[in-house]
Length: 466
Image (cartoon, rainbow, N blue to C red; front, side):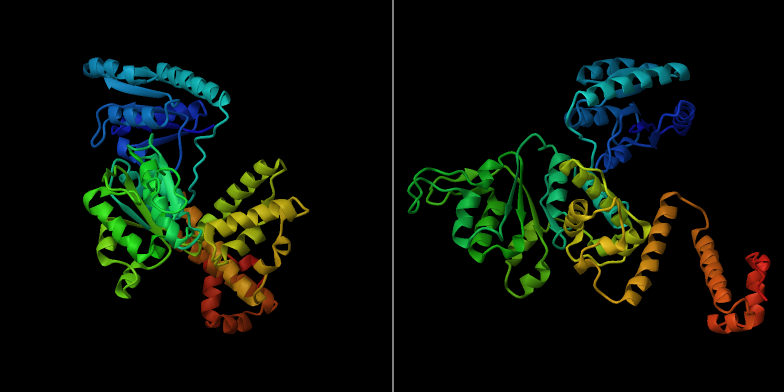
């Protein structure tokens, strides 16, 4: 079951509801503001929402309006003080599930939440869609920054430039920016400017009039017209030919464009999101990209991190892709052994998320056993020296454990991991020397007395080390 979201700037209200839901074994997440919850929507979706009206920043009614537009089936319970009832009641015409007046009876609140959960589950079971499955996954700090940026840009029409290596998910981010914007009910149109021949790209973008050139037997609407009122995603913008750069600059400058062979200006009402794997700053310096167009596009820039900068997300992504492939193929889901997961987390994966997804699909089809081991990986994934694999393997495992500890907000993380690391080194050295402390100390690069003190501090005297 997905969680109940509690949104209130009053900590005591959140605490009361959290305790009540815990007793009922109902999962929950708490937020001190509607803005925090709106940002979280880019990552996950709750089963129901229970929100106060009056909070700093966006109000509960602002939140309700956004949820009604983007997730109309999501039940929202509005909490109100008695003085707010009139405004609250009028807002419920916009689709709130129910209101909960303050001060409220806890049992009544739980009953109301259970009713809302039941309604949500009924609607979910009657739908074949799965709107809560996020298409962009990641716990890494770099991805959380991307999620926060999407949240901040939700109500903006600003032009966005997305930088990222091939396979990092630039189009997924563009779709998310569109889906969480005020243009969400209008078209999202994507075009890869590098994949279309130079002599056809102008017509693809701007359309053409009948008779504009040989073969133009009818008037054709280009991508700008197809995206009217919505979002136009220009992928691999860095490869756009110079003459098309000039035409695009004109559209961004005055908002008008002409079909090929046309004489009447057409007003463009689209939001531009561009993306490239190239360094546009460098291409501008080399004269390969117009500087004035670069500045027009570079209003807001988002950088998508490569997978090697978010290794802690690899297990999460791999599990998601294995689950997705199993569902598509109608087979039982494969699982990766801990060793295989750690091995993958240590790889650079130049093709990034797309390459990892392709690997998971290959494993689903080709691996004979249910649990995938390192030996089951394709040959190209197993190339490289064993020493390098082991060396990077433990670092990846450490990074994964640190990431988990950070997510759990564990205290004294550095001290805990230092002690574990030190204990492991001492244990392995003593096992290697048969318990001879002088030799173990020399191998570890410390004095015998220092080693003895550390053994005592770690409570290792019972190991029988001499």
